[in-house]
Amino acid sequence: MKYLVTGAAGFIGSAVSERLCALGHKVVGIDNLNDYYQVSLKHDRLKRIEHEHFTFIELDLADREGIAGLFAEQKFDRVIHLAAQAGVRYSIDNPMAYADSNLVGHLTILEGCRHHKIQHLVYASSSSVYGLNQKMPFDTADSVDHPISLYAATKKSNELMAHTYSHLYGVPTTGLRFFTVYGPWGRPDMALFKFTNAIIKGDSIDVYNNGDMRRDFTYIDDIVEGIVRIQDVIPEKNIDWTVEQGSPATSSAPYKVYNIGNGSPVKLMDYIESLESSLGIEAKKNFMPMQPGDVYATYADTADLFKATGYKPQVNVREGVQAFVDWYKDYFKV
Image (cartoon, rainbow, N blue to C red; front, top):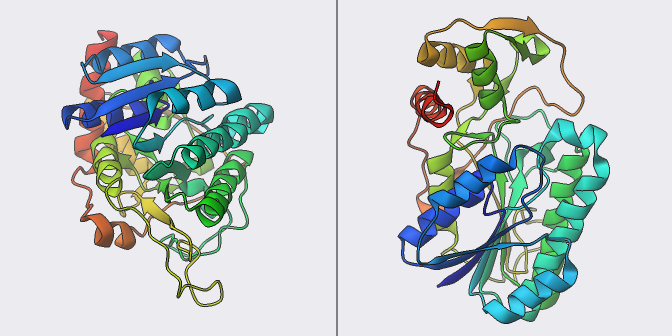
């Protein structure tokens, strides 16, 4: 089949593109190559996907005419929409960037899917939509009406927009709420990358909420496996579904939302200890209060995704952190 992958120079997008090509699919990847972090890393990710089935086009999601023209010209079968302005903390100081990428950009993709009869749109949501929820594990049947960052609010908005297009136009949509993805070729603004860089340099690392946090860290290969599998599980209409009796993760429209995570939260200090062990260096720790927009813990209930796809994460934190460290040392020659 022919896929559009948005955010193809990104951490997850590049890995998904590479996997789809290896499976024999044709992939057109787009990315605006913005400078939220070093563009050289994005270019190097793209070099990994040098494959006869892969075509890269530099294009901004907010370019309405450009995206419309892309859909008209390329005739995609399916779309995996992973591009977004990422980062909870960055959204505190740069809110407008999230409106352009995450709201306008999501709408241009929905419009392309609507007008060109796309078989299935899979898009990135986020565990951050759970906001003030405290019941663990997070379940897609739970209410997600109280986000605590603009980033989270845009991701919740993406789910609402997708449902509208599924209902009005019959576009099959699946949203995936990602839980703390990490691994080789990861984002430099994520904790593992920042911690590794600081520890190797001998600098201290900022440990928020005095280290009393838990995250459902999920290794990149496990995430890619889940995405590729869910592509083949196309939502269908369910005429018996009602708002009053049904889960908000499904609908009478061809619409579905899943958690995609490891399903096993890890203490932040245990994560740091795994990194120290892999590096053979003890970190200097600067204990800090909780940051605005952060949540104390994330924990995914992935039972629905497992039932639909057989998806079950295979990589534990110690293995995943070691794989990242090995990549980091090789990439940066340290």
